[in-house]
Length: 150
Image 1: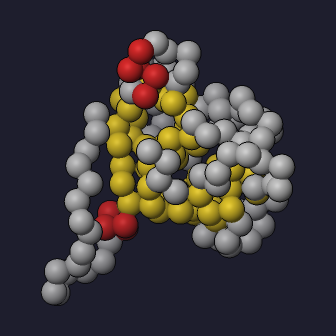
Image 2: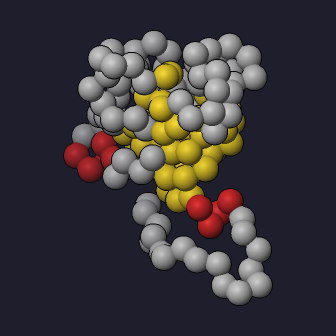
Image 3: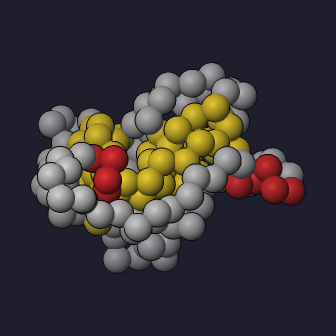
């Protein structure tokens, strides 16, 4: 359910908005997903459904998850359509306690499903985003910039 990616610009007199700086794609949820969860492509599916479906069961890899698609915008049940920020600004993304400042590179590893952590030297997957602020509380949420992975 891909959308087109257009050249983004602001016409004279146009007001800047978040939507000018992010890309949202619609997927099918393979599990119940909460808004703010980091989601990955569902490798339990078969064929092309592996990139049509997403899940928040992201804690597969100790060294970072290269299958991350982005941050869920909606809370949905399994089988429902879900909008995911695949690039750009995402408000209220789930992060771990160590995300205590802006500018921390993020990766999703096997620490906690659906939650990003600060990237570590041993991580082999690329960063999936960067924090734009400190998380308010340990294991809380913060605004992030999602790096386009596909």
